Length: 248
Image 1 (cartoon, one colour):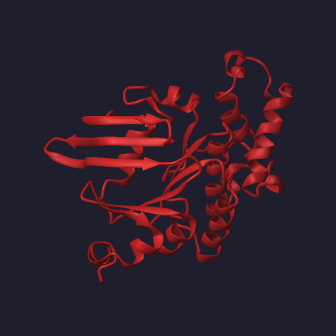
Image 2: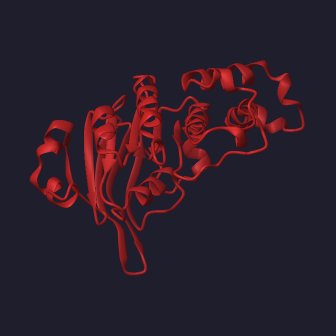
């Protein structure tokens, strides 16, 4: 394991019954890098995110954040080291406002969580952190809106704001444009391009154009294995990727 990498996977596998959902994955992502993880449905992308975030334990292999072994570390401890994640399925509280959702996310990652009986409004720092996260995704003017009244695109923006609330060093984005219209997808791509360049971002994205636009490097999974890894230009012309992923 090397502290030269923000995220490093060595021989990571996950077996469900006799199925290798993730099979010997090697991955090394440098600090500040934008890396896209692509592949057809069932390739193992979300399972790999579950392993990185700690939602699932690997069957074998090791996972490190900034040189520290986190293979058997609980999810909340990985979060304190600077790892955050969004999900394909919304995890918002629909009857709370946009700001209240973000306040809860900030509070969960600060010492204030130890005093949950106190009023959220009493924490100036919490409000500042929450509003900064909303501003980063263009939702400042929707802070008082109730979540159930948001558009699908705004839901996605808020989910990213929640992930940013803890000021992560490594951000895992799981299909941030899924279900969005072309206009919403374009807005999302523009927002993601403006994220702090010091933050490491690993993104699962079904839209090949957006994935290649946002990422400096691309890793391609197929049946749980890495079949290609390189610059976006190299991936565009890789014959195996074109055959398996693009159907060319």
